[in-house]
Each structure stands twice: as C-alpha cells, then as structure tokens.
Image (cartoon, rainbow, N blue to C red):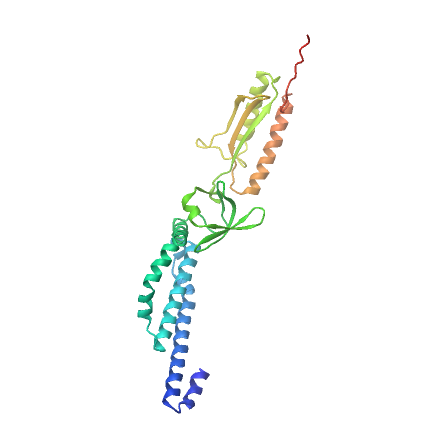
Length: 283
C-alpha cells in the first residue's frame, strides 16, 4: 500500500508512468493470486464431510495442484501486464512438451499410480505396509512421484509409486485380527494319550480365553497333529488374537507360549530338537 501511494508523486513522465503502472499492476496481481492460493486449504476443510469422501493425503495433493495452477495463472497474468504474450510461448512449447512427455513416461506412470493409491485408499500416512521382496515399513509421505517409507531399522526409503501398481501391497494396519500360526515339535517318545491330552488342553486354554482370542466359525481354533517330521511329532496351533495392535499381539503370544510350555510339562512330555542317530557297524 505504501508503494502504491508513493508512486503517485513519481509520475513525471510517460515512460516512468507506464513503468510504475506495470509494477503496480504486477504487485496487485501477485497479491490477488497469492491470497487465493492461501484460501484454498481453509476452504476445502470447511466443506462438510469432505474428509469422508477424500483421504487427507488426496486432499493435500489437490490443494498443492491447485496452488501450482494459480501460480502459473498469476505468472502468466504478470507476463501479460509487461506485454509478453503467453499464448505464442505455449504454442511454441508444444513440440517441446511432446518430446518431454515421451522422455518422462515413468514420471507420468508414477503420478497416475500415486493418484490411484489415494483414490482407492490402499494406504495412508502411518500405515504399515509390505511389498514382498521390496520394502516393509511405515508410510510417512505419499508424494507426486514417490512414497516415503520408514523401514523398521529407522532408515527412510523412497519407493516409486508405480511399484504399488505393479506389485501386491499388503496393508498390515488393515488387519482385523492378528494370527498365531505355530508348529510345536514334541519328542517321538511321546505316547498317543499324551499327544491327545496336550492338544485338548491347548485348545481349551485358547477357547476359554475370550479376552485374548477371537474365536468364531470363520476363525476357528486349530490344534491338531500336523506331521511326523524328521526329529519331532509336529502339532499345528492356529488361532486369532483379539487385537490388531502389534504390541498387544506380542503380549498375547508370550502368554500363550508360556501356557503351552506348562501344559507340555504337566503331561510329562518334552519339546523335540533337531537330532541325528549315528550307527557304527562292526566287522
């Protein structure tokens, strides 16, 4: 405002007048477009239930894209004020744009893949995801070209978005119930009666613990003899914890492991370990 007022007293010649008018027009245009860009984010978040329709990450994408659009429009308007025609420049860049597009296919592929990730809500910031053989960690940022994932060793890894379109992505944070799937090896000297009692005791322990375990017809408790392995009789223990939180899951697993050991000891059995018997033939 002070600049506008001060220029009133400097209009002594036509050249200076035109120059100052262009500066004033440029500043006014910049302020208008900057103000509009600053109102975009508050305006979006004032729309009722907008976050139920679009994810927070997608909203950030749209807001940033609109800010870029308004920046380009504002810059073009300023160029027009100074007599620089934008339309011929855009037309002249047409062939150049085609060449750039052909050379930037991976960039557009990553951009489209990133948009699909956000629209389909495959994952969001804070989710733990796994891409088999590529990455496992916590999503920190979903960008236009790549996604930042914090690995469990605390290193930060950037994965091109097209990897999420070309590979299966497992969202661990979407797990409804975490599964326990153990093979427990018992010694071959265990009797049939002991094996049946151990299986029954483990199953009762899990079924009766409604607080820690989720037992339904679709998530049954399985405690069965699985196979006769090389050094053990293997019992399969499969059940679902009544949580999707990893730390709570570890506590439940710890308690179940101790319970199983107590049951095996109670039935006078022992856990097997890999062993070999060596027979020496005498001549």
